[in-house]
Length: 120
Image 1 (spheres, rainbow, N blue to C red):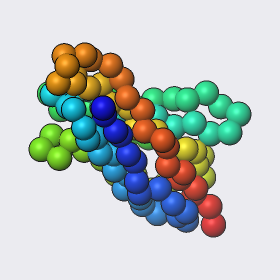
Image 2 (cartoon, helix red, strand yellow):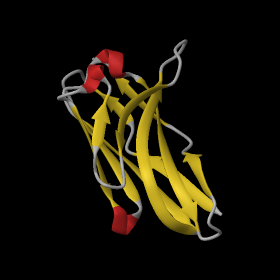
Image 3 (cartoon, helix red, strand yellow):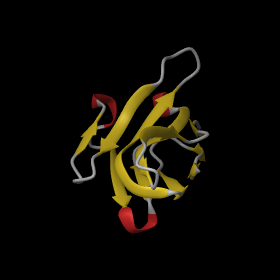
Image 4 (cartoon, rainbow, N blue to C red):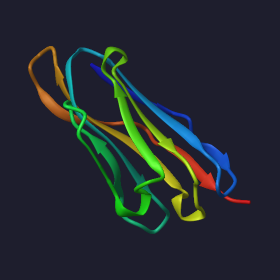
């Protein structure tokens, strides 16, 4: 069994910062690519940032220069540092991790989502 849990969302004023965390636990052999997605009401889920097992990163154009994705392999955790937040960043943020389990099965796992609200 694998469990993926996000934390760190909340309410912040425009221009503020938040740091999201996503921790995976359970029968993990290897964490592969990891990423953050978001979904605002009425919109499709979109990729915000992703990081490979080799630490290559890519970002949505709307967050480049403001968000930073990183990972701690020893703790099976991925982070999203969000700076200079804007009201349009308001959404539920989801963590996605591609995990190879100890049973040699590789699949994507999603967290439950964490709400980020940017408002004055």
